[in-house]
Length: 115
Image (cartoon, rainbow, N blue to C red; front, side, top):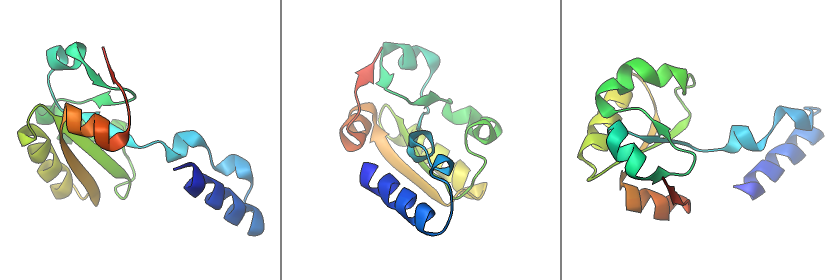
């Protein structure tokens, strides 16, 4: 991830785009926990956003206006995150990845589970 950010900055400098246009925040992945609030409180991925799967269609615009942005989803077993993925795909989101479980998501994203 850091190498990609550095490459973008170098390209920006070469083409006259200021380095301030790029930041670690822009490169930060969007990870959405689609479980319940009670499940969230028992442990969630560091930096994740809680949007229960049944609310994803009405709340996604608050965190992802760009429909080409990569979005990672997880839940307890993968069932709810798959439903959320289908919802987002129907809304036009192009790059949605179902990481299935909390543990799989933590491992895949190399992030901690926090409470």
